Length: 235
Image 1 (cartoon, rainbow, N blue to C red):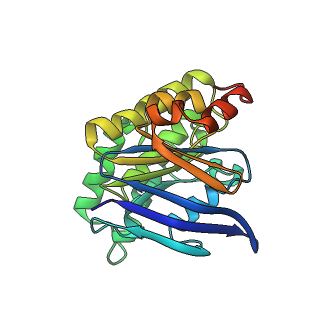
Image 2 (tube, rainbow, N blue to C red):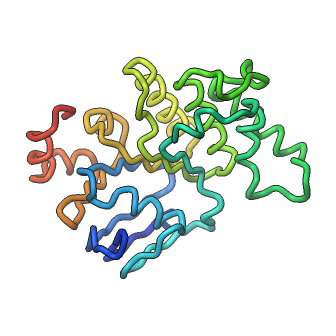
Image 3 (cartoon, rainbow, N blue to C red):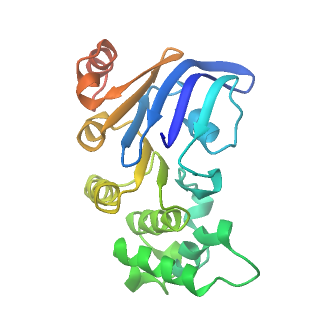
């Protein structure tokens, strides 16, 4: 069974239809990049997958026993979040909140948080104040937090916004490692088409109210890719 199945979905924002006839499915282990121009409905789709927005029509289903609260979500970071006065360990542990019982984190949840900090090379920072970290370090912390929420699916919305090119490349490598070595399915919204083509197994390109879905190879042969690449400095 597919992890996510989307059939003939229409989406809207502020009572205005922004995308129709969206069809795709995501299998365990896939890396799906969602691309397209601003206003094409990418972030609205993310919110629909998370259950934060209703679809106008169609069918959007989570399979393989996946619950919405078990999706690891890394949203675009706000200025207020960058100045959050908590330790790295506290921020990462907060990703376990959906499974928390009582007022204390369990030994298993603390172990899980420590393992994810180790995976992302931030364990030595666990006692540091989050707001004192660099932008790249903060994104690693937030990624570790998202991993505490899931064993199946990471949903990333423009995760490298504001990062310099070197840190961006390192962060993309981390996401690829999580997908390929740890077997976690990834959905990533991005404007960085060139990087998406090197990372993804599949592309969902939202455009003009509709959407293309297929493998990277099929996307490279599509008219929408050629049109988008010609008008994009990133392709």
